[in-house]
Length: 172
Image (tube, rainbow, N blue to C red; front, side, top):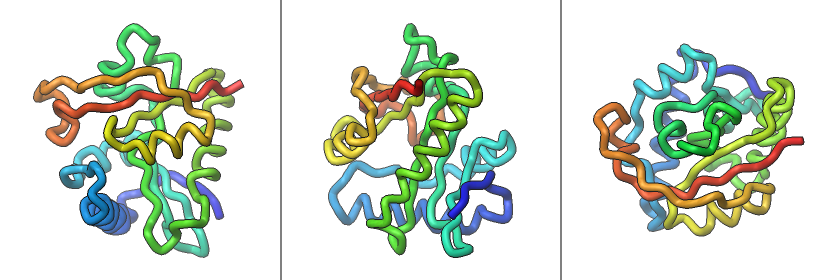
C-alpha cells in the first residue's frame, strides 16, 4: 500500500470512485455530493493536491490534501486558515470498505503536516452526517463549530449554501 499524487491518467478512476460514492450516499439516505465537479479534481491534480491510495496495484481511495481553498478560508475565517492543511473529498472504493483505509490516509496527512511545520489538520463534513462526525472524532478530530457556506458564484455549485461541521486535529 502506498500513497502517491494523482495524475490526469487517474481521472477515469477518480470519476468512477465519485459516482460510486454518490450512489452509495444517496441509496443509504445520507447527505451526498450533488455531482462530480471535474474542474475541482483537475485543479487539485495540477496543484499536486489530489492523492491516490494504491492497494494491490489499484487505486483504492482518493483524497485532497491542500492549503486552504477559497471555501476553507471562508469556513475557517478568524481561525487562521493558513496555519493548517485540509483533507477533503475522501473516498474509499466500495470494494475496499472495511479495510480501515482512512487510517493510512490520515497517517500520511499527519506526517505531511508535521513535515511542513504546521500544527493542525482540518476537515469538514455535512452537519447532518452524524456517522461521519463520530468516525472522524474516533480519529482524534474535534468539532470546532458549524458553518453554512456562502452562495457566492466564486464557489463551485455543489459547495454553495451547504451546512457543514468543521473539525480539526492538532498534530504535534
